[in-house]
Image (cartoon, rainbow, N blue to C red; front, top):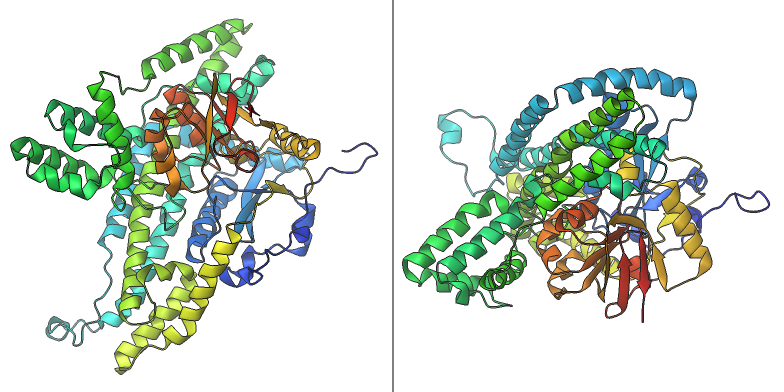
Length: 607
C-alpha cells in the first residue's frame, strides 16, 4: 500500500490508448483476447519472454493453445494447491498474462492432498515416464511431418474409383489443416505435462532454502542445480563439432567471416574427398538438430536454422577461427559441477538436524532429476515440432496463393486459424464446382491492412505491467520462468516512480561483473548484429541463442526468472546475467557503455 492507504498500481488496462494509425488492431484477434471491464482490478504483466513483438493474427495460436494446456495441467490434472491457470489478453498487439491464485486456506488444503498423490506419482516414476514422454512427442513429430497438402489436381486419381475410396481430395484439404491445429494442441498438452511439476520442484526447494538460509540468493540456490548436460545444447555442440572437422580436414579457409552459406556449400563440393566428407556430416546433423528456431518458437517468421542457414553459419565461422587459434569451445561444465557440489555441501552442513539434511537432499535431488526435462522439452516442442508446424501451415498458404486467394504463401499468417478455415472452404467449394475462389477480393485488403498495422504497432512501448500491484503471487511458472515475484514488481514500480535512467534493476541470474558496449536487440532476427565482447540487451533470449553466448560478455533481459532459459544458459556459459528488468530495452541504447552486476542484479549505464 502507498502512504495514506491507497493501493499501488501500474496503469490500468482501460487506460491504455490505441496506437495512432492502428486503431483497428482488435480486428486481428478473437473476442476472448480483449480486456474485459473487470480486468482493471487484476494484475497483468507483458509476456515479452515469449511474445516480444506484435502478434500476427495466426501466431496468436501460440498463446491460445499453450495457455489452454498449461491451465489444464496445473489446475485440472495435477491440481496445484495455490494456483489455477493463466489468462491472457492482447492490447495493441501485445500479450499480457495473469495467473489465477487460490487463496482460501481450506481449498488450498483440499487441493494439496490431490496434488501430493498426483505429482508424487510422477516424481517417483520420473525417468520411466519421461522416456514414455519422449516416445509420445516423437510420435507427434512424425505425425506433423507426414501431413500433406492435397494437390487439387484437375481430375482425381483413378484409384479413387478402382479402390472405391469414396472421398475426394478436397475433403482432405480441411481435414489435414485441422490435423495440424489438433496436433499442435496435443503437443502443448504433452509439453506442459512435466513442465509445471519441474517448476514446482524448484519452488519448493528454493522456499526451503530461503527459510533455512535467510541470506541465500535465488541465484546461489539455482547454482546447486547447474552443470547438467541437456539436449537443448546439442545444436550448438554439433556446430562446434563441424568447426573442429573443418579445421582438421584443412577446410578452414572455406569459412570466412560473413560468408554466404550456399557459396560455402558449393565450394566444399569441389574440395575432393575432404569436402564431400564434411558435407555428409553437415547433412547428417541437419535433421533434426537444425530444426531449431532463431526465436523461441512463437512466431512464424522466426525461422529455423534449416530455413535460414546464415544463423548457424555465423556461429560456425567464429568457431572455426577459435579452433584455429587453439581456443577451447567447451562450456565450463566441470567447473559448474564442482561449484554446485561445493555450494550444496556448504549449505547442507549448516542444517542443524539429520531430518533437515535428509529433506535438503531429497529436494535438491528432485531438482536435479527434473532439470533436463525443463530444458530438453524446448528442443522437441518449441523447436523441432513447431518448426515443422509452421512449415506445414506455410504449405497450406502456398496452396491458397496458387489458387489466387492470397498474394503469397506467408500471407496465410495474417489470418486467424478460423479464418484460414473459411479460405480453405472457399477453395474446396470452387474446386468442386469448377469455378474460381472468391477469397482474393475479401482477404487481400484485410491482409494488407493488418501488415500495415503491425508495422505501426512495432513502435509502441508496452508497459511491463498493468493493474494493481498484487498482495501474493503463487504460480510456480510465473516465479521460476518469468521471474515475476513481489520483489520484481516492487522493483518495476519503484523504477517507474524514481525516474532514474542510469540504473536498471532485475534478477541476479548469473554471477560476476562485466563492462562493455551494449547491443540492444528487439528482434531475434537481429542476432547477426552482435559483435564480440558486447553486452546483449534484449526482451528475452532463447536457448537457440547458445552460439551468441560465445561472443558476448554478459546478458540483460526485460523478462525472465532464476530458471528462465536466459538465466540457465548464462550460468552454463559462466557469464554475468541480469534478467527480469522490465524495461532494459527501453532505457539502454546500442553503443552505450554499461556495467552488468550479476551478483546484485543491477545494470548501470556508464555513459
